[in-house]
Image (cartoon, rainbow, N blue to C red; front, side, top):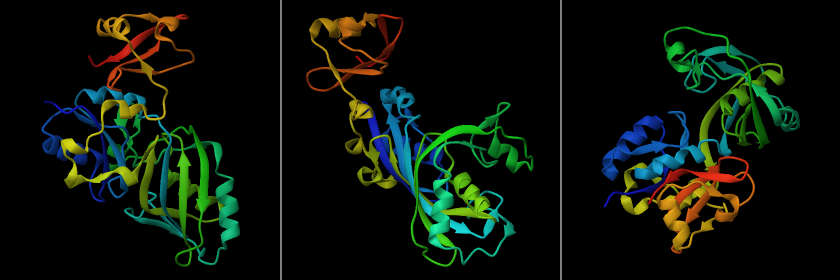
Length: 288
């Protein structure tokens, strides 16, 4: 029986997100595996995978808020904004106190504009920035709006090195945030030891090591909507869903903006409905 659902992987350092997907395909015996958001090769932590027919649900997770930890190394800027790059500048910042660093971090919270790093997967004119960077090409990157709800800084673990925890919107680059922190403090900085703790309502404490990704570790498709109110379908509604019918808000028993996951009495995900017109909804995904 094919496996459908959500797998939570604690990505090891040195693996790309694509590497994890490729390995998981072999471990799960299916080509249908995708991820809900790239994690840097040097980073560790939570990578959310969609398996089988649940790959179609990843679109509902890819824009979710995320939480990270890492270390801001003040006084040293690098070409990649992390510990993997070449040093591009140095400043005497080892004596900076915690209050000053926390104040600068607080100024980088809320709705901010952020320039994507050249080593990111963002596309400019159809090409990913990291591909251009590998070719020695640097291009202008327009700033994009992101939201940083929390940028916490802890006491230094060594001179000039401060542990940080960041809660942010999808599309936020923590390495850019740390580089901007260094600039705001009158010098430069880079990020090291990045680790992703959460994606939406999933936590890295639930994740399994890559080598332990098995069908038994895959959560059911409905897990993609953890924390979202579920529509429980009776038999007539199930038949309408089976045929992919457009339904009124009243028939589906919903209001608001959606999406609306629809399950049967056993909490098995049947479909995901989204707004269609003023008074109707349509299925974005049907799994029965």
